[in-house]
Length: 470
Image (cartoon, rainbow, N blue to C red; front, side, top):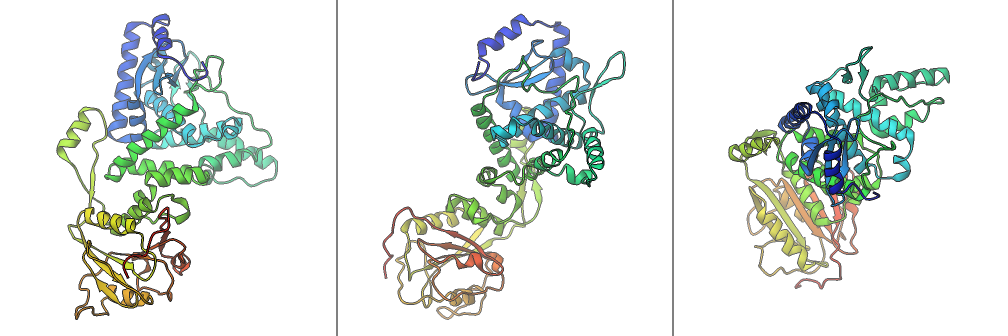
């Protein structure tokens, strides 16, 4: 079964591997309670991931638990009811959290050579269990009761760290402090590779399936699709102000330095918008998305949270996180949009900007055309111009020093969007952090090299546009 376990096979697992009905019911209740706990506040990622697993199947065909592909683009959660029944409630939560996190890490770290490296496999175990212990408020791994000493479930990150310390000490090398060792998955991986004698611990109870003879396959396409869908759903919840924000930022930080693909993935999901920072130009493929994220970071303020009663009640009834909505002070934000009419001005850019600013809630917009002089206009009017370009006039008008038609700009702009080819004398605004520069085809992106740098992105219209009316 190279592509996944088919639904008929899952039904066979249920039929051919029976368990005591009372044990199955006990295990099911613990599983459902744990998933409800995730939804209420501890792990939005785990909650959404298991919501995407349309089949939760108790079976003794596997020793512990696993998330598997069903062959139809979906997933199923398999769990051994005797295993869950022997764990306490918090132990079941740990197992489910670990399995969810492991699946998400397989989505984020897709390099086959890396994932097939036993050292990286161990690093992932260490990193995931560290996060699970911290997020679930545990001081140690869950254990399975036995006649002798209880058997821990999974790899103990502190035990691996002690082995790492001892190995480097024998080599005469310095080991990192634990907090630095565990900082990211790749940090753990890099430090474990420094060890001369790396013996992977083999716990009696591993909380997921990975390469054993009875392993149930999980194809990369299903992992990629499921992981992206879950992260997109959780990001939307986090942007509305829910507790998912901290978990997503932690997951992003732990996968830092994971390469260009991960940077694009997080950028496309809106991580910069979640952080309230300006995304780097080279990491974003579409200038429209870049501008939306940058403009949001300029206008965002406050951390006041509002609970939407009706929507929240429905989510709670479904066992999901009651999503809070972030609101700042009830103040209209001012956006000044200035078009350089001396150079190439794509019609699509003007039309899209007009729509964007017009649909942004709580925004008071001011529109300018400029070349050597500044001319306010109303969207839809004919934009005329010609002659040289002077950015300083726009700066002076935006900062309240220049009169146009006998009046100064009374409001203080929260964001100034400049659409230009960039060819004019450089300027230094009083607050460069408020300025957003959209550089048209073949223009000069000097604002990106300004000190301090200003938000700057090149507008690629896809074809050469005619100059607007001169």
